[in-house]
Length: 514
Image 1 (cartoon, rainbow, N blue to C red):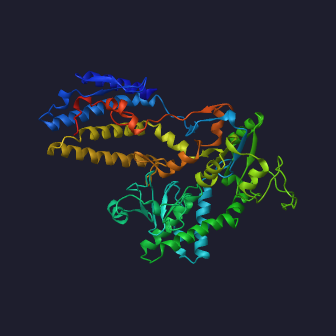
Image 2 (image 1 turned 90 degrees about the horizontal axis):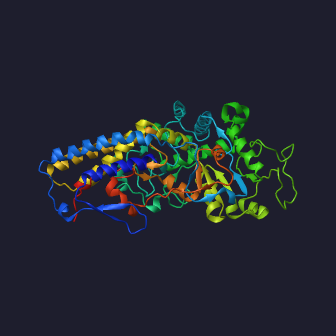
Image 3 (image 1 turned 90 degrees about the vertical axis):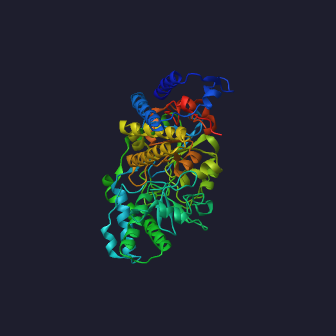
């Protein structure tokens, strides 16, 4: 791999500058060697001209980082790959299940505009909100999935896997909230467990945070922000909890009252993206003798397969088993399991909603689960660009410089380190803007995984951009998760390769910290 080759070149450079070091093997057999600092070098005093010394290290790191980029770019990520959180063999799968929306079928960009406009009009016509909010249009580039909303403070934000708010991503209306104000409101940037959304991302039983996990929630977040913005700009006193409930109810009514479905049926070509590759996936599974089923909460008339009967009338027959090719309405998952006997790891179910589609199936019933994450393809394409690779490689290297040079406590060194910290902050903001100017990547908050990714890793055995990715794999393919080094496993090579994947050697400058 390119990263490994780059690491070896860095290691060789490190050895050339690391005279007097001795290496020993880790206790585990076959593990990579790591270096220890000879006692006489631990006691060595730092050079007298710290400014020249630190900036020379900086320039050397810049040079080596620049040399790394071509080798990294030779090993691009595949946007059509399937990624594994848990080892799973398709040879064990006998039954494939699917959600409908954003799994079997994808929608055009026009659908979210339709939902936004319809819910906005419901706010005006049924909830008596000011007609002036009609001036706000849907912005598809404002929000991303997985964000949290503080119902009581009317704040939209991004939270990481450890319940920490990513500063710079907290929005009141359409305006970012200054970091100092966020820290004052939350006594830091950590959100306590009792304030977080509940297990399924909802704000209930005292939980003040709501997590938006559904792709359909993008227009909801935008509408919330727009109405908040209107009230704030016009100095209108309002209750945030009531606003949240009214917007939530309006978005719900767009679905439940059939407004969205009628609009789609009236102009299918405008709203539905036909996926011939999805047809190919289903045909491939059928050819290999796999059983398949569809479970959806969309109206049965909207799912374009077969109606209950010609008139769409529900029959009164007692159901003893589910028959191939038939459509069944109502019921529940437990009744479905009872009628089919489809339990355990022989079932693989695909859906786009981490909670409502996947969580219970894997936790309570032992099904294998596959998450459909359409945003994955576009994010990987960004990660494959030269600009992104240059920025991330240098960001990791700069972080390593700060980590290793922070032991120098003299005023000159501290002044330089502050410059580096400022540059690092700017680079983080640049990295965020690659994906979304307000909230960044769906999967990361700076170095940490997002809360969204934490739940994705827990509830999905595999994840991919679309079902069509299955066409790249044989029906007996086994998915193996990559062994990502834990933090306590890193020192075996991190001293030689600095911080992260692209570490720069600073071995001879390492100072013992007492």
